[in-house]
Amino acid sequence: MTFKNVLQILGGIAVVLTLVPFVAADYWWIRVFDFPHMQLTIFTAIATLAYFMKFDIKWAKDYAFMAIMATCLTIQVLKIYPYTPVAPLEVLNASKNDKQSQFSVLVSNVLQKNKNHKLLLEEVKQKEPDILLLLETDTVWYNAVNTKLKNNYSFYKGTPISNTYGMLLYSKLPLINPEVHYLIDDSIPSIDAQVQLKSGEKIQLYAIHPTPPMPQHNTRSTDRDAEMMKTAFKSRKSKLPVIVIGDFNDVAWSESTELFKEVSELLDLRVGRGLFNTFSADSKIMRWPLDHIFVSEHFRALEVLRGNTIDSDHFPAYAKLSLELEGKDKQIPKLPTESQLKNAYEIIEKEAIQKNTKQ
Image (tube, rainbow, N blue to C red; front, side):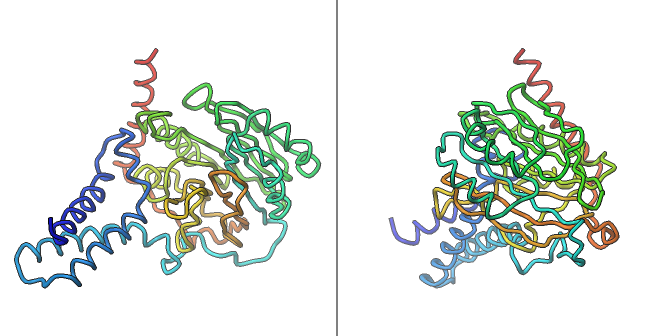
């Protein structure tokens, strides 16, 4: 087999992997290809460049190969472009410095089996977030951090669980009517709460951690997608400014997350700023953004960054935000189409049917 044949085979693989995420199926072995998009883009670019530099492009099949590879690369670049610093900001920078309307958020999947509780506490001490969401927290984690955190965080709502879906929400700001919900499964919690800022303004917070489409969790992405869609409709109906935070077990550019964003009418802090890949902290190559902070058009950003390592397989996600109601018209979210709303309802209905079938 010649080097040219090898590149053609690699090109064929790149084409298949580019097209697979567009397949409207929720099997885990299809949805998992949503994740390594940046890696696929680099892989395709290298294969295309190597073919172009190594061989004379003079035969019809060479032109066809290059055209197909160029098309794939264009699709991949267009998908990743919004999450680069050269793209326009979706959530604009703060235009005023009213500390009473400012607050910070830290989202951290701590990894349940991680025993280095001290690193997490050091990260919290360094960032001093007003709102802190800890995921994968069991009673061991709760007992290890609660004594330290309760001194600075007067408000708490959570449920430590040993199934890797425990959730602890701490806040320096008043939590109004905080509630734990089980939107899909009675062992997968989410948290809803109103938060009162120092200015007296109230915002609506939703915290989620849906299950990933993996064989050891769910063979389909239906549960994950349904929880995201249910949260999206909650956001859509809210009369208050909304922030949705958590480990979505989904990347920012996937069809599911894009649909969530459209239906919820929320904005992504990453757009125009960078990927801020939070998973996997164990690999320098295979990383993608799984931990998210979505906001309604009422918010502006002062700071967005990825946190430091805490010995988890996730890096924390951090943002400092400003509530600027008068500036909301300058960053209006894209409204969902009737087709997108129908698709979201169908995902929720599909999950309900699957649940009834299992019962």
